[in-house]
Image (cartoon, rainbow, N blue to C red; front, side, top):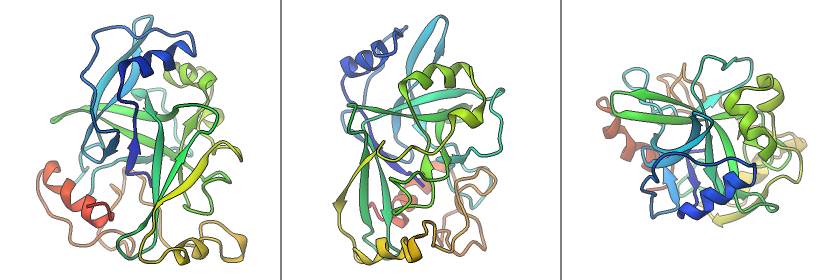
Length: 253
């Protein structure tokens, strides 16, 4: 599950991204974060439809918990679902992180696109009591991610950006694992179990050997009571009170 990623921090980078697919950004320039690393609960820019163009809008990363003791919904499973009635968006990034290991600190892996200065993740957005928020869609892992993690965020090709916003093609054709060679990867922090945690993911050459149920589903909120892989000791209270606990439990505090 992707709970941290990197973004461009200059307006000109977003303009160049949209010119790449012959789209213009309408509306006022939003204030952009100065820190490129975005974590759960942070505000970050997303792209959505606006008239005959697109607009860049800051939103909070992660939907509020759907019920008490649940976590923010920052990843959302895409398989077998239809999103014609959903608010679709593009999440601009320069890279994203995945973590391996069960002990802290965890090993931190960065993924990026070697052929482009940016990558775009398929997302959904909604209005909440705390303002607008977004989540990332996930799917089965492609060959570049499978040795590290058993899920991946949906990385869209430039030709698919507008197709996702307008849903010009069936979801099953857009929300797919990335083909081999799409993503580069590097270890940016070695953890307590490095490299053993990676070898555990490659038992008998099969990705997804970890015996944990998926947590990137709004029905589970990414953490449920009784799930052996869910973080324990989650606080009960407002969404904002959960964020520092989530970051510590995920090994990034």
